[in-house]
Amino acid sequence: MGLPIRLRRRAGDLLARQFLQSKSRPVAKRQTFVAVSQLGEWRLPLRGWQRDAFDTWSGERPADALIVATPGAGKTQLAARVVHAALGAREIRRVLIVVPREHLKAQVARVFAQSDIQLDHAFANATRTLASDVHGAVVTYQQVTAAPRLFRDLTRVPSIVVLDEIHHCRRRSNVGSGTP
Image (cartoon, rainbow, N blue to C red; front, side):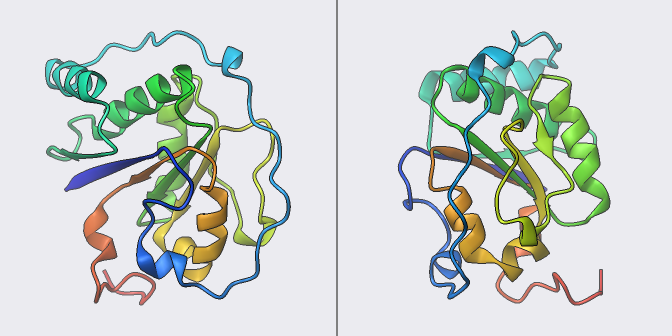
């Protein structure tokens, strides 16, 4: 399935309307951000299609991108490359990866950690802020649905939001229902 990447250049311009209309409590003051100097050079090899896709993205720098490839083809690795480039260019200050299932959070965080991008895969909505030593978090669609205003507020700074398996967000989705 597709893996959309959304690059937010201005606060409040790209999140879904349902997230913006939440009546949840506002979050506490935001913390400081990880220094870009902690981000090393990209050193991981990319497959041919990943290099081509990254070069296309890099040349155009679109606000939205959709990655469609077979399972195991390396969509997460390509997303990590895009995020690494955007962080390195100081285009963004925060990364939010949204996955459909809890067990995928640590898996995605490990892939990003290989490129020096530190993501909190244990982030809990009750925490309401991110630690200052991470670039962002990996959360589930259920977490976002439960606290849309929290995630709107977390992405008020220039951010990239990666939606893994976006088909889980369809209007009448079974996310949170306990059914596959």
